[in-house]
Image (tube, rainbow, N blue to C red; front, side, top):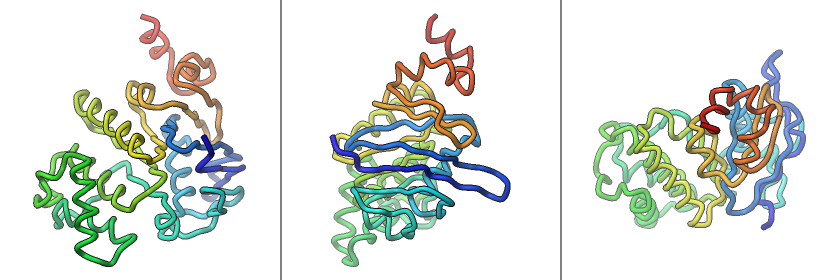
Length: 245
């Protein structure tokens, strides 16, 4: 499978803080790639660099063979990269349908067409029955679904999902895992940042581990779970014991 995204020697500083350092990795088409690491490891900053929220200090980002390193966020979105956020950010006074339509307007100015696109993704995320509900009145998991529906309405080829399972119950996490797989099966490549290890280990085909802004490991979930460097830096001895119990 061809690479859809290539990150080469990416670096970003904030004053004296080195948030990302010499980061290199590829993402294959229709892959679910997990990105994990302790708080402050550089995961969200990496997303922000890929999506055009920040310009890098060094390195290169290529999407479908094109250099997008210094493209604006709106340009990158129109090219086919969209992201969700750690905290759902719906327009609280708009309905679920109106929120999803905002994503659709990335590619069309036609209101009827935008509504059709938005409804398709609300149905995909099981929110069609709540299309007329104001976003502020949705439950936590439904706000997460709405964030996903709005992102998918931009018609991405690559979706960056940042801790979308934070605050969910175990049953809701199971639903979210299934939804991520469903997104990939629809033809969208996914990079997932997540701290819920049960989720990231079950949904990812490959995992990259960051620590201090640098990549310290890369491999299959099984390889990462057995990696001593990763256990020491992030997973902890408790994870080792739980896995072998």
